[in-house]
Amino acid sequence: MSDAIAEAVAEALGVGAVSCDAVGGGCVAEASRVGLADGRRVFAKRLPDAGAGVLEAEADGLRELGEVSARLGAGDRIATPGVLHAGANLLVLEWLELGGPRVGDATWGRRLAAFHRASAAGSHAGYGADQDRPLGATPQDNRRLHDWPTFWRDRRLVPMLDALGAAGRGGGLVDRGRRLAERIPEILGGADETPCLLHGDLWSSNLGSVGGEPVWFDPSPYTGSREAEFGMTRMFGGFGPAFEAAYREAWPLPDPDGFDRRVGVYELHHHLNHLLLFGEGYRAGCERRMARLLRG
Image (cartoon, rainbow, N blue to C red; front, side, top):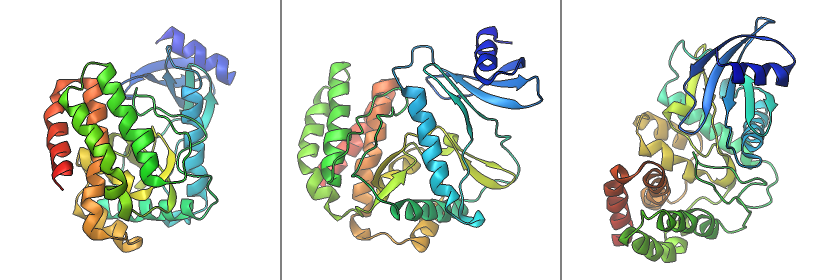
């Protein structure tokens, strides 16, 4: 048992810990399943070197996702783990016993569309969020703007290029990225700019099922164009054609002819982030996608 994590959880919840086992928790945090003296099990994420407010911001993001989902009928919801404690270095969540029947791609597509549509029904103060939330270990500037292409250029693409340059991983890719940045208003001009709450890091390792019902976790939420969500779903695959087909059927997207190019911009962002975090294995993919966007 990891004494440090078990003791931190026990202190945070006021209940003794009787077991602590390491589990997968992403690339930047130490994650554990902790058994409590009262019979519960909880998920604990420990980030000793977390920046100010990182884990609290993750907790708030989970609550935001949960609040939107709660407005939906049972057949449209995507569940999130409940937040039990959020502190500077420790996040404790309800334990989800993942497994059971797999949630099909069409179900994920329909429920994501329902979630986006429900979130769009609220009032919004612009694209972004009230808190900065990292994407993996990469800081993200969520200060709000009222124009979507400007938000993507100034809060996503350009800061990513700056980070790559500062890390010595840019080279000609950064120069080409700055040319692409000049064209972002043109490329994203046909996007659906309805402000929606996005999960922000939507790929298969951040999704699961409990008893055949979909759940998601480890988000980086902000308000944006719903099309940006597809950048990550396309990056690693894992979703078949039924996913996007069901989404479009539930809530059609405008300007379908320009959709793939716009999603290419969003997918490039995640490839650039992986180049920044994990190194040269992602460079070739970044180069191909950058060249395709500049040619288009």
